[in-house]
Image (cartoon, rainbow, N blue to C red; front, side):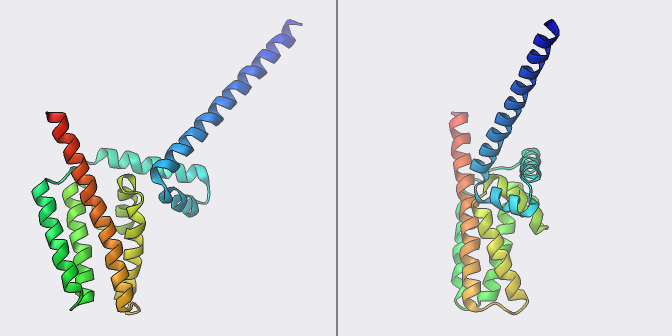
Amino acid sequence: MNEAIWMIAVVIVLMAVAAAIYVNQRSRSRQLRTHFGPEYDHALQGFGERRAAERALVDRTRRVDKLEIRALPAARREQLSSEWTAVQARFVDDPATALHEAHALLGAVMREEGYPTGKFDEEVELLSVHHPAAVQHYRAAHRLADDRVRGVAATEDMRQAMIHYRALFEDLLALGARAARREVRREA
């Protein structure tokens, strides 16, 4: 009789542990989906399996946590905004050059904020941690800019690429402004 009770107790404990693991995994999935938004779905498509996609997203977060991401000073954000306005104005006369300059300006912002640059896939992964919605724009702009390099992009495609680049550019500066405001409040 005692042996049967022990077996039942062991089964109950194992079921409780399994239920706790299941609830924990569901909670983690929900948190990642909420934080990463469309990037969660993109990772899921890329890996084809939820656990692998979630491990990759957690890994991205850990990699970004090791970086020294910093908010740009207000004066620098204003200067960059002015530069962006000038790049957009040049688009009318020379769309290809303006598109190239827009990409270079984004690279400058990323480097100044502390993101490594040079490898598009790495940039996208790391940016997705703090800019999960805007990184979709970066992918679209990159694809359209590649079409331009291959000579298959029309002016409208380049205009769309500029719009996508602008979405990431504005998100980078806006996040930097919010971080700077938090820093000022902490120091006060």
